[in-house]
Amino acid sequence: MQNTVIDAHNISKVYDQGPVAVKAVNNVHLHIEKGEFVALVGPSGSGKTTLLNMIGGLDEPTTGNVVINGVDITKLSSNELIDFRLNNIGFVFQSFNLIPVLTARENIEFIMLLQKVGKEERETRVLKLLEEVGLTDKANAKPGELSGGQQQRVAVARALASKPRFVLADEPTANLDSQSAANLLDIMEKLNREEGMTFVFSTHDQRVIQRARRVITLVDGEVAEDTLQTPLTHAG
Amino acid sequence: MILSIAWRNLWRNPLRSLVIIGSVMTGLLAGIFILAFFRGLINEQINTGISQQLSHIQVHNPVFRELDEEQYTINNVSGVLSALEKDDQVAGISQRLVITAMASSAYTASGVSIYGVEPLSEAAVTGLNKRIKEGHYLENSASGQILMGRKLAKKLHLGQGSKVILTFQDKNNELIAAAFRITGIFEAANSNLEENNVFVKKNELDSLTLLGGRIHELAILLKDNKAVETTAFKLRNLNTGNKVETWKQLSPEIRMMIDSFSQYMVIIIGIILIALVFGIVNTMLMAVLERYRELGVLMAIGLNKRKIFSMIMTETLLMTILGCLAGLPLSWLTVYLTGRNGINLSRFSEGLAMYGYGTRVYPQLELSYYWQVGGMAIVAALLASVYPSLKALQLKPATAIRKI
Image (cartoon, rainbow over all chains, first blue to last red):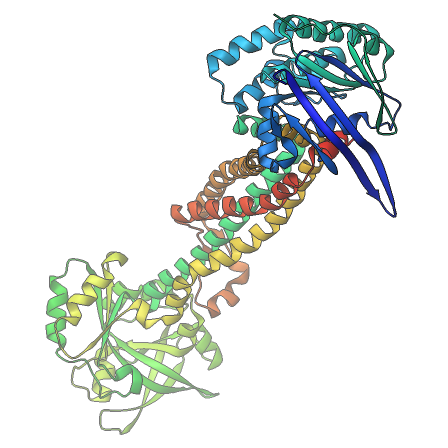
């Protein structure tokens, strides 16, 4: 259990839509260990994003609980959850969602400022992350001056800046061309392989699915299949 | 960090931010100018009242102003005058007889107050000689002269050189009728003064009323208004049994206007700020709703509610401060420029004269009011941003992130 990062027990999410209750996620058990590279796949409406949101503490399960590093996040208050997310989870969103008024460097640094990391360490880490995502020369560019692929790479760097326990990525390649998507996957794979960073991402992009080590297929909010494509290797 | 993001957020939609900054600036300019204009009107009324009628301090017999009877003259005039001679703040003293009378012409009659004055002293205290618009001022050599206000002359159908009969009681309550010839017609900023007062030489009125050199009123003009209370205090301490009143006590309506100035300020600025508050609420609400997804992302990645709240408040505060930085100096400059040359209101002179105002108003406002108004604007802006900030806190990150 020492390597367990995410432990979701029997989680369900039911949306009340008038007289009809819609079960977006139904009774899912999920156990993810450190260093995994997991793809949540399934057709639209299968509950991938809802499941990711519940794992990330952005949405509350109707039933069940989510334990991250021994902490049941379903029992945390709204402010406690924000702090928990800040220090434990990195997010990459489909639409990049960088802060438009900040430069690439500042977007990455922002998380560390929230964590009250010292200036020297912030600068070192920002430079390292920009180098890892291949955007050293774009450090001072604002999101509007970057391509979609570059923005998503900044988003990955931002997600990693807080030194999270794992990164959740919701359809990270959906808005990218094939070359940008391949570059992004290269970076994520490298981080996973070399630094043991755990990635959990939702996708229905076949190129991404092929590169995932573990593929969890959701159908109608339930886990239909959980396949290990490549043996799990831990960094170090 | 919050400050930096808030500052940059302002310039994402420069037009919208400039509209709010401009509104704050215009609101402050309008509010401060109205206050300065109002203050100028009050000052005008005070100056006119002091220089043309009241002077700074008046001394009477304690019951004279209540009973208005000629036997109540000032006690120990020489003692009072001797004290005033030693006061270096005194610029002029006018000794007056004040008698209630009926002024009659061939056409009609009107109740008046006859002021028996020494021409030179009265000129030094009220500048009456400078306000003669027809004819000339009282001369020591001639007798039977009277100065009449233009309004009263018009009412009595009289002009310069006309005769007027004044009927009044002497010391023994005997009815006296005396004829005077109008040597000068004067004008005054205060229409009451023009309509109700006439001026004759004191020695002539004294011999008619048999008062034997006694007087009813001492009008004292000082070099500086700030010395009023000190000089009045000294005169009261003489214990001559007279009533010593400053211009504020003599004219309670002016005092009331001065005292209520701060209340007017709150009302005027309050109205302007209420309008401003609605504008700010609307703009900031739009800013929050437009950035709903971004705020959701910020909350998702770790910006807590307190910081989100601070960010929205800071944005509003920055816009208001910018509005104040533009509006307060602009207001000061406007007040300074209009106050230097005055605003000509001669088109409304008749209406203004009814309330004792002159025709040129010099807007003026103490600097402390600028800070107060600026402070009120900032407080109003902070209150206005509470609702949009709370609205931002209600969002749920998962829903907000998906918002298009």
